[in-house]
Amino acid sequence: MQQQQVRQFVERYLATFSAHIVESHPDYFTVKLPVEVDKDIGNRPFYWSWVDKMNLAYQPLVLTFTFHPDCTPEGLRCEHLHLGATRMQQIFASAKKHGSFVCMYEQQGGLLGNAGKRRSTPLVPWLGMNLKVSLLCDKRRDILLYLGINLHQPRLVTDFTSFLFSLTLTPAIPDYYYTLDRKVTIQEALQMAQQEVEHTLEQEDQQWAEEARARLSEELAILEAYYEELARREPENEQTKADETEEEAEQPEAQSSLEQEALHLEPDPAGPTSVEQPISFDEYRASGGRILDFLRTNGIQTTPREEIQHGEWKKSTPDEERQRRKDELAWQYEPRIEVSFINGGLFYLSSVPPLTRSSKAKSMRHLPASGRIM
Image 1: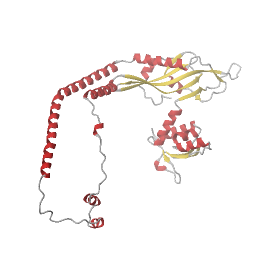
Image 2: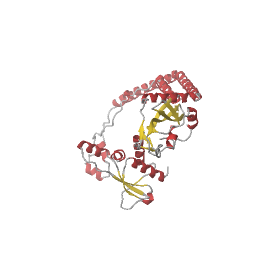
Image 3: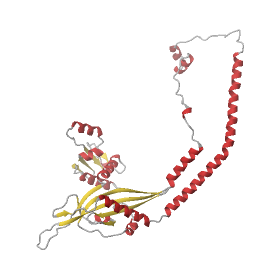
Image 4: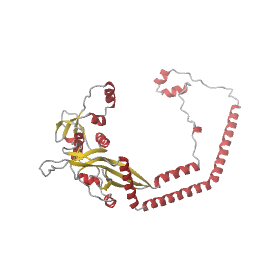
């Protein structure tokens, strides 16, 4: 995404909310943010909570965006917008939140009747949905479906998005047009979409799932072999630990006997030859000593370190560890299917889309999604 494309996207985003452009320049532009845009990208949550609670008038936020870092205007506080900028990611999130579902009307040229007067044209309601079907295991493959469902007469077509790109759509109903009633409910339309997804999956080769289960069985066999070998080595490890425990028990006994012998030793009758005279803290610092050494020498207690209670820590048993690793392998390799809604809309059309079946959608699903998703 080049900088020119970034600017075009931002301008379209702001134009959707009818934002007021204060100043437009080839290298930058200044915009007064509307309420919805300010709440999404203005980074003023405390201001908006205060305004809403106190019921105060809104003070618009004015920002200047530049798209060329070498052409920054002098005397203006501006922000460089590029694809990886934080503000750009906020704009993408806002566009996704507000643009996930739209309502559009088809607008055609003047349709004149036999008397040369403009006649009314009916608009048929269509529900358009872009779905992503994900085949998941340790690998991933996505299938994009562009479905259109006629809500006036039950009918489903594929590749509906490409047909919409060839039309002139407007968010307001044009003059001399009227809409037909919806005879198919949204729930019935969703059931039709679900049947189409199931039909698409039936046409898919299921070898990917069989290969994933084969890899899962292989990984589980390796895991079982590892823990079987570990179970055979446990008696040797237990004997080694027992020997180490006996050695550790003998060492304290020997140490205690040495301490008792040292206590029974007779003291030296001559006594100490000299006794060090205590010095003050200032004298000790003047001689170049450290404060911590002075505290230790004079018996002043230091802050004890925090003791860790090792008894609270419980070591996992081999069976628990093996079950945990089995669950991880099942999550990674077990084949599964996820269907997610990308975006969609309600479209009132006077044109009739071509009737295509899932075979055409299957051949088109490998095309890049750019320019094909609403």
